[in-house]
Amino acid sequence: EDQVTQSPEALRLQEGESSSLNCSYTVSGLRGLFWYRQDPGKGPEFLFTLYSAGEEKEKERLKATLTKKESFLHITAPKPEDSATYLCAVSAETSGSRLTFGEGTQLTVNP
Amino acid sequence: DTGVSQDPRHKITKRGQNVTFRCDPISEHNRLYWYRQTLGQGPEFLTYFQNEAQLEKSRLLSDRFSAERPKGSFSTLEIQRTEQGDSAMYLCASSLGGIWYEQYFGPGTRLTVT
Image (tube, rainbow over all chains, first blue to last red; front, top):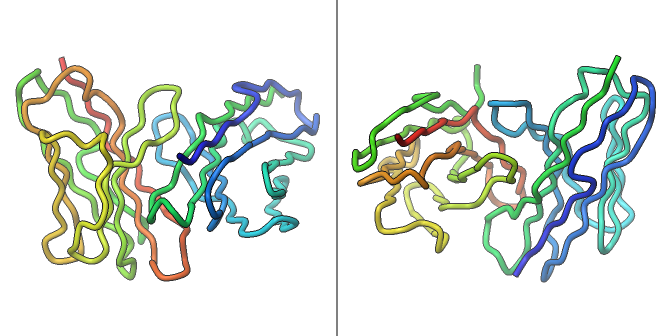
């Protein structure tokens, strides 16, 4: 069974204080690993897809990296508007088209 | 707005009533997904359509749940005889299919069963 574990559950940062969120996964045949951002009361917003170990993607202050066992979402010099829950999900070759999500990391950036 | 839309955004119902939700995917997407999300958890897969065919259902999807996508465009999710445990956010997503696995989510329908 596919498993996705995110840590920490919650993270508080001061504006400008860089940090990383972790996503550990166990799947049989990774098709892709996805990062989403979710604001309270809204649907997840797609950020990145990573397909193979060593791959990196960047968008503004966010950078996602992938190894064979985990992914990191690095946040550089965060701003209060980066406050949200960040979700990691995997698509596996043995699991059809479904995404299996972790429980998310709730990020709060204080001004 | 060409994103995924869902209707209604909020639904309050009494236990035992039936409810139906609608999802309109991104127009060129042939795959449509339903997920359920409870507070503090990530979304959980319920079912998925490719065009009008329902190809996969989670064991989470009890007999009280049924989904349709009659013309391969919009989809409906019906819950019969609602229970308090059905209270959750119901999310719809769509994707292009083929080698494109990114799923784009709608705003969700918040269901509260009293």
